[in-house]
Image (cartoon, rainbow, N blue to C red; front, side, top):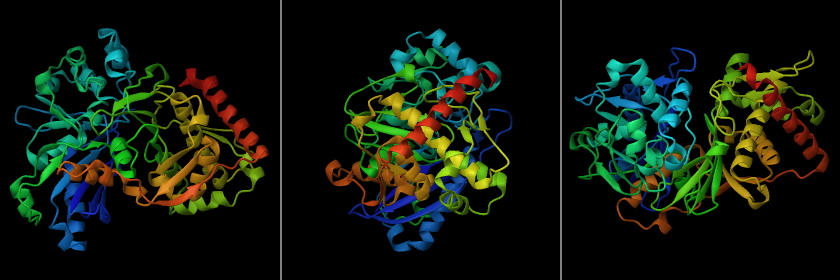
Length: 489
């Protein structure tokens, strides 16, 4: 059995695969985000561990026999978070998360301090990345900054708790702005620009390599029978998702309707486009890279609206959208989905959400449609930034919690102009990918492990000319609206 652990923002997911790499069981436990100040987004690492313990207990109870046969573990996690440890390996402060926007000024300062930043890292400095957070700490929490002996990413803190090893891997490290992404090694120049050194960074491995072994006392307490259970390097959540659905070769990719929205394309070569706010990261497998566009509020925008209007279940609100007529959709308000600022293509931490065009005749369902549509438009922005020649992309996989809505999935296919394939197990693809990396670290062959998941449902783009013209008009209005008000954020 192979165990995949995915540390997300809203919860932790576990996936248990058998030796034939079939999904046997899943478990999850929820997490909360703390926002003590405007633009801040934090979590306590201790809460991650408590959530992991709760999810482990679920599998121990529901699949006791299979659970005890776990022979390797893989990790996936939310990227960019800053976990800082002192000389006793104790956490100094709450982890600053990927969707935290406090360090905009430090991004400008970082690129001024190291003019080669975009060349070294392949990325424009954004508040979500790890490095600006450390520069912010140096300037605003100097007493804590001076105590830092180790900087870890979220999943790598879990690794430390599981194994005692201070290790990261290439795909997650690529999102720190501390990595020379093409050379796949820490950059002394980028660390120096933030007042840090190589001795404060974890050792690097590839995602399919062994990074350490589960502590014997943990294995015993959890009822695991195999001795010396290896822990794979693992991956950042999106690279893990790609491994989980089999997007490991050039031009394979996916769209994620998760807390954030992602368009991911794998590549055999290093390719960067920082001027478009497109991310260039290392993949979780050796000598592979990927490009990625990211919007900070996707399914989380729909969850926010559902909470605001007091709906009992998101599925009910989603179903109400399906009842709208084409004319109602055409006359719906326009929604800017920038509830946490935005990355691709705007790189604007201060961008905000907005409904435009509200009238007396609009109801909750009209606004829910606008939220879905606005997220789809944001994802289309990202796809165009990555690949202006959209005709070269015929199909992508669709993953994330928002993928559970067929109405939303179909709208996304129509707006992006590509066929979307929803794979079985899409809701836990990152955890599956982590479990697959666990298998690879034991010596199994990639061709046998990183296969494409079975397609559960397909969403073909609606090519009706009138319908497409209506969507293009609304997309044009969406883009014009952001341009008209961006100076007011």
